[in-house]
Length: 242
Ligand code: CA
Image (tube, rainbow, N blue to C red; front, side):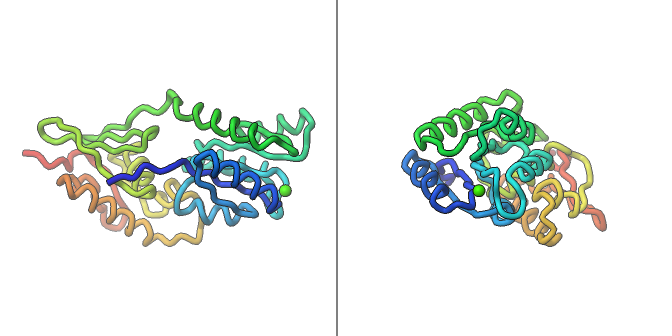
């Protein structure tokens, strides 16, 4: 059964007192928070699961928040995560730079925690109603990116929800966006996991197996074909039907 989860906010801020102030206020408002001091740690967390929103400090040790925002926007996997940027700078030109880099909103330090929470809620609402999220449909499967649901329609067209982990969900999303194409493991790593090079190609096989196991409950695991020597392909002809 799918458990209703509170929305997860990733806070990337190198000043512990500010990170704590934000986390306390967001937790109080019903969000789940994770805190990291710099972007490398953020990437490690995000390799496994993506947050619903990122609070990103501009000035960080190592990679700057502006640079990181640009990278998140360029990567298909992370391009739709809302980003709220924090900075001590208050100049109009800095605000433009931050938004150009891909931030969705911008709060200047020192900020009122109440206002920050309100802005985060507003940002999440804006994303919830994004009109571009049309369900993907391949054969008996329909996937809705906005609600994170995958529905299988049986022979009588009765919809049955399929529970998937976040990685399997992203994997299926990518396969459904590109049905009938053969994807190498490297290609899937790039598009589903992003370009974290420390992830091994056999990770793909693990998640393909989990995805097939979930689909097997509805007799449609054969939609994901192994193409020998090449990779994987999602095909609607795999439909279990005579
Ligand atoms: Ca900082």
